[in-house]
Amino acid sequence: ILGIKYNAIKSLENWQLDLYTIKKTLNNVKIIYICNPNNPTGNLINQNDIIELLEITQGKSIVVIDEAYIEFCINYTIVHLIEKYSNLVILRTLSKAFSLAGLRCGFVLANQEIINLLLKVIAPYPIPEPVSDIAIQALNRKNLILMHNNVNKLINNKKKLIENLKKCHVVKNIFPSKTNYVLTKFFNSNHIFKALSKKGIIVRNQDHNIGLSNCLRISVGTNYETTRLISILQELSSY
Image (cartoon, rainbow, N blue to C red; front, side):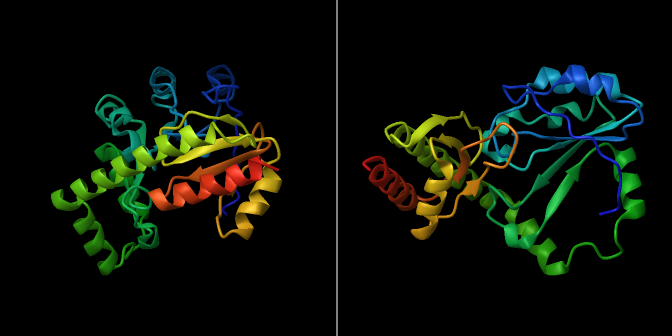
């Protein structure tokens, strides 16, 4: 929006950081953004690679880690590194595991120095009072337990989804996921995408992304939604 120059570095074939290329292009780079777990692939970024990146960028660049989906694999958060690395910023949101996407509320975890800088440029009234009220409620102990229970249900549904996707002949490959979605490679993703859409099931078509040809990102839903999706895919497999 502001016309700031940016450089997108392709990940490696296993969707890990290409540290070699990143190191070569660090000149005048002020902020580095990394999504962990990654979207749409669903994989975690190697923590040692993130630490190496934090080491080489100290005093030069801010490293922003977007942990939007971290509640689905909370043991892999790198929040504990904030104390050691003053250039680390972590982004969180209430849109995913908390099911509050309509609230449009997220938050920043960082050292006091960075928070103070953000306070200088933040809008005068950045969050409406009803939004902050609901956010505070969502983060109380009772609702955190509710969120964790819902996450566990989704993880169980994900296991069921993956097990059944393996039995569908239209599926070519299923990629490991630490999130609430499963990246799936089909033999003909456009045909599947259209067929599912006609049945009222919307998945994310990733076919246009580099290295993700014939891939669809399937969000894990309820037990009923998972069963219905698999039923349609099995039907399409029989043609």
